[in-house]
Figure 1 (cartoon, rainbow, N blue to C red):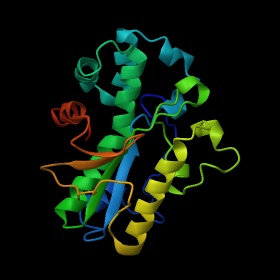
Figure 2: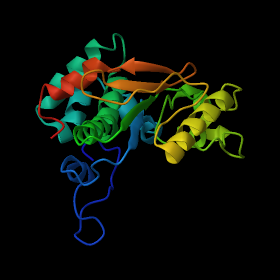
Figure 3: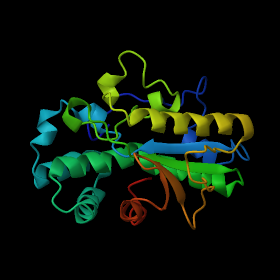
Figure 4: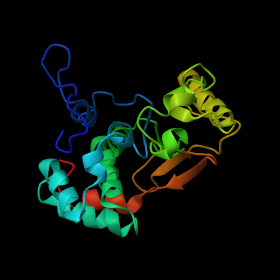
Length: 233
């Protein structure tokens, strides 16, 4: 990708994948199918842990790196994200933008499209920060997987999640919600607040963290910054 974090991704070939998934969903390919859609807050951090060049960037270098995929939107987005993260270094701003470019904004696009076709749509944001590796992962890509499957206790998982006692309650709640959704089409768990369906007015989103909660339009300034330009395509 233009920000150097992901080199490969699926592409339509007319045989196995006939269309860009987000475009197919927008056209109604999955109309009326209930979905849970969401991302992790710091997706890109999993890919950037050992990127020393990234962590050495100044503002000019960060904008230049983002320009590869965002073009003229790079400066505008960098400034918008900086405004909502006072004191954050250029590397953190770059990773936040790249996380949203590659994951969160496409997920929001998908949720909006499904809602538009009348499908029950539930949005989440996984914000639980891992203490592993000195905390550099934040709420990174793939971190939610052992929580959804309630196997944080399995050998090797602590490499990604750490070994804190706070993992088990979150894993139990997330697994219960996903199991409920698979069974009944509604994600519910006794340990979670009621999870409203997503729409483009309230943008209700379940935030999975050490305290789980429903937020309306989380990270809204960032979402609006993308919508203000053409960067999301």
